[in-house]
Length: 417
Image 1: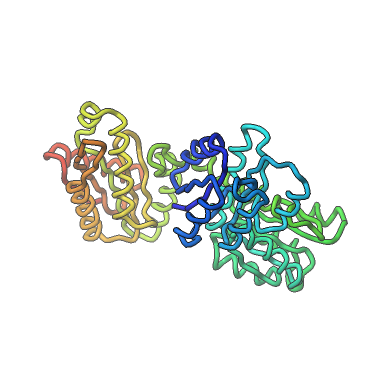
Image 2 (image 1 turned 90 degrees about the vertical axis):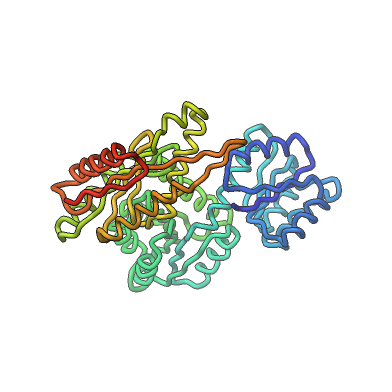
C-alpha cells in the first residue's frame, strides 16, 4: 500500500477525490481540509507519504504554503487548484511538483488522480540515462529525481548494454546520439535485437537538427526524439507519455493472457508459455510435473452463500498457490474452479511433498466473510515424467484428478509417465 495525502478545503472536491481514489486498492489515502490538519497528519506519519494531491488556496494558508510543506518532507506533489494566476503557477512549477491541474471541469479530478497513479508507479520504475556529457546527463538525472524514478547512468552505448543486461526490469532508456565507443544509433539498433517497443521504450536526444539523424533513430526502433536543449516540462511530458504507453501495452497483454477474476494466467497463455517449456525439457530428457487442482463441492459454496462468495473462494486459490509455489512455476486458471500448474526442475519426491502441503493448506484454511466462515478442500491430480506432449501430460493429470475425486476428494493422486 502506498500512502497519499489529499488536501483541499472543498468538501465537494474531497468527496469526489475520495470516490475516485477508492477505485484503487493499493492506495491508502489521508484527507485534510486545512494546512494545520495536513501538518498534523504529516508529522503523525513522519512524512512517510509517497505522493500528495494539494490545493493551493487553503483557509489558513492561501499562498501555496502547502507545497513548501510537502517539499520539506520530500513528498512529490500534484497540484489541483482553481487558480489560473499564471505568475503563481509559474512560481509553483519551479518547486518540486509533478503536475499542475486546474479545477476547470469534472474531468480534472480523474486527470489529477491519474497523475498521482503515475507518480506511485514511478517508485517501481527504472530508467537508464546514456550520455557521455556529464553536464547533460546530470541535468536529466536531476529532472528524473523529481519524478521519484529509479535511475541508472551510462557514459556510452557499450556500458549501457552491460547495465541493461544486469537490470532487465528497466522500462525506459534515454540516449544521446554522439557518444564514443557506440553512438545512439548503434545502441538503439542493438537494444531492438532483444527488446520490443512494448518492453522497453527509447527516447533519443540530440543537438543535431539533421532530419536523417532523427529518421535513423526512428527506423532503428526509438519510440521518441527530443532536441537539445530541452525544457524540464518537455522531457517530463515525453517520459510520462512513454511510460503510460508501456502501461497500456501491459494492460492489453494482461487482458489477453490473464484471468479477470484472479489475475492468474489463463488457459490460452498456459499453452503458449507451457509448450516451449515442455519441449525444452523433453529435449534434455528432464521430467516435468503437471498438476490439475479442483475445488471440492464448489457448487455447494455457490448455492449456500452466493456466487460472490464463490468468487472469493476462487481468488483464495491464487493466494495459497502463490504462497506455496515458486515464481518460476506456471500457474493458470483453466476455468470455473479448475487450475493447472506446470513445474520444471523438480523431483517426483519433491512434487509429492509440495502438493501434499498445498492440499493441507486448503484443508486448514478459513475464509471469513461478514458473519460467515468458509472452508473447503481441493482434489489434486498430477502427471510426472515426459509424455509425448503437454496436452498428453494435462490429460494424464486430469485422469489422476478424477481418481482423487472418486476416492473421496481432498487428496493427491500422482500418475507417473
